[in-house]
Picture 1: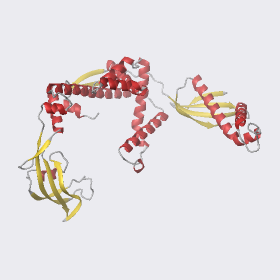
Picture 2: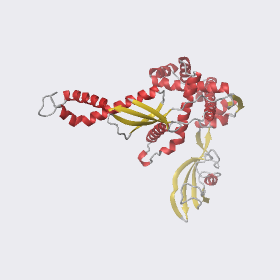
Picture 3: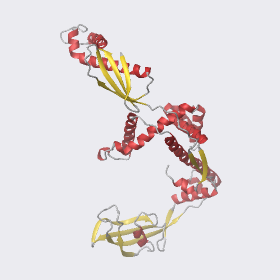
Picture 4: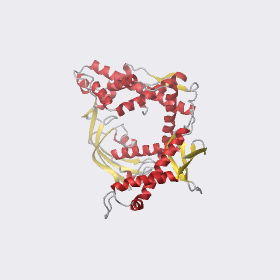
Length: 434
């Protein structure tokens, strides 16, 4: 066996492989003899089939198998000897040669990039700062009350936040149009369920009132045949109901899962949940900034093979998500290019994180993993059951370990970078997508 390497570009490598024909023929004959011992052919006793017949039927298959195994062995020995870290799978191409003793091939593949983690001392991280106070607890309770709102008939004109029930008929050029008619249609005024001009026409009307008004659809309205068009609506208000929020009392506390109805206990639980969520969101924002800083400090090239594999993984995840939502993927073909940028970013970050963890020895400890599991379990009614669930399967703990490693990297970057705290409003922090 002979091998040599030559670099084609930054990450692509080419390895010349040479395999002795005699070695292939010898192993092929031995394999065919073993196959012949179990081969059944009409007219011959088991194990007595002539070698020429065995070779005629299975020679090509045996040769292909032996050659594939030899190429795999020779390639593995070559890259190991030269300490190459292969990314993906090699592409094997036969070479034109006049040799009568050897088969010549070229293996084309990519390697992982070699780099030292970049300097993080110039990175700037802005850490959100927020302390949960009574104001945030009160605001959360108000939201919870609104989620449990009830409605009672009101003998007055409809106002914002009221629930109204109406009949309506829309006409375009005097003719009813598709989607412009409904009977006993309920909606809440002021929540944007209907067009603003439509709600404005309903507001101020009492049960039993009827009116006719013109309405011009927005130019970007989703129904193209109505976009920018002026139509006429006839409406009849059949019911006006005023909202009633529940009192913050024992019954409300019980509805929130506090068995004894203790309001103070409910507030304490809401405060604990808010603090956990605020902490999670702050950590998520800091982590996002750290990852961007790592990308900026480590402008590395990544193997296309790894990016392609990540694209396929993301496409498969998207298909599964669509199917779970009841959508047919055949009706909505997913395109690889949709995921190209995301895949490249994920692969790049993965390589950078792996190098930082190895260089700085930031592997997760069992104690860290246990603490994270316990923190997650604390928000459940039976924490011990949740902890047992995590430790029942290694894969579940592996996922937690991955997060712990990321946290270690974040802590390492924060220890190197320029970090400043910036006060953030509760609504701004909780309103951001996570």
